[in-house]
Image 1 (cartoon, rainbow, N blue to C red):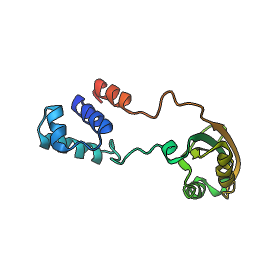
Image 2: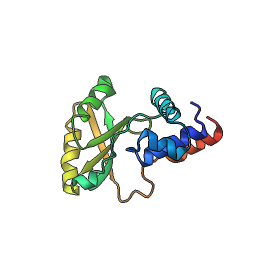
Image 3: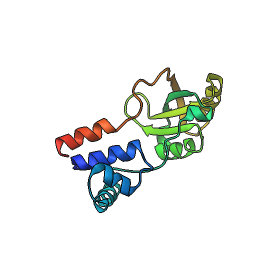
Length: 158
């Protein structure tokens, strides 16, 4: 998917300030309001931009512990039923099917290390989960980010 420099600047602006209006965005980017709207609509339609919701910090909600849980699952049932049941656990923020020694990788949060045990117990109680291995996050020196990738793709010309 090709991104040009204006697309990259638009994504960067809305990433940093998701509440900026079209008129203000057009002023800052020095293009017509209609251009901003058309480009934004195109980025959404193409699946480059997938949302405009607020980013929520789990620690601010009292969930200061983050961990990654690798799951081995029974292959007979498949991934989908397990993922559906994991999605019912509020502290499970992400679930990915993976290659390697595990079948699924979950990013989870908890209030404390002791509370993490409760979350892991809920995960291993899910039908189809055979084993879980957990690593606790100590620090996040590089948080989830996409702007460097957007800039690189735009610089390559797509």
